[in-house]
Image (tube, rainbow, N blue to C red; front, side):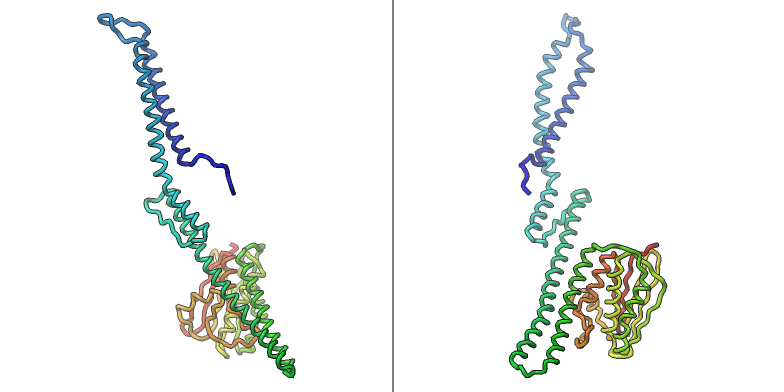
Length: 359
């Protein structure tokens, strides 16, 4: 946006300082005139016939006052210019950093020294913003690259299957159609997950009162057939637990937590427990599952897109795309909740979501 050129802040501060100093000097001279010269008579005779009078004092005082006013004005301009430049130096650094950030360079930091003041607070806040932006941009670039790779895979498989069918017309069409259906379903699920992840990041949903215990029961009921096919015991415990948020997104978060716990469980005989409870100022969801042991350094990466905690066959409809916990983390963040992942000593994972309570 183009604006008309105007006086710089430094020049305006300089003129303000000089003007204030000149006004203060004029007031001082006025005070001298009011309380000194007014009491001197116009004509007074003293010893030897010589005595100061108002006329002589004015003739002596006026040139000196003019010189003093000129000195104050010049001193105010020079001193104001230097002081304003020194005071505005931190703002110049902040502006330079903002311009660098505007060109796409987010690695620059101001790192202002000195004691805490308004400029130091602004610089620290700007550094924090740059750090968050740099992290967010890097995450988005990594996410875009991973998403492109994940979406390209089913499309490449579909193209290969179609090429094989074209070269071999006698190939069993039923098998080909079934494999295409599976690949297409995976691509659709991945696309829907990406859209959901984008939507939850925008936080433009309507909030309402939600009972998390009912959400847990609904998610468990929907995923019970999957748990039974894998020989996993699925249980829901807890008390009515209310929070404020999007019922649809919270159901998706709960479903992803339970599904992730089932899919990454032991091949058979494992357990998944979903627990909800009210705590002072918070509504807590805890999903715990058995399974293989997880390396502690692997756990913090599980909420990143396309990260999978364990290697498993991707042959069923719930194989996923590595977005389950990433969506959980995004929905939790949109609801100002905290997400904690702790590996169990005997294997498996405990996931705790702490949402704001309604009490």
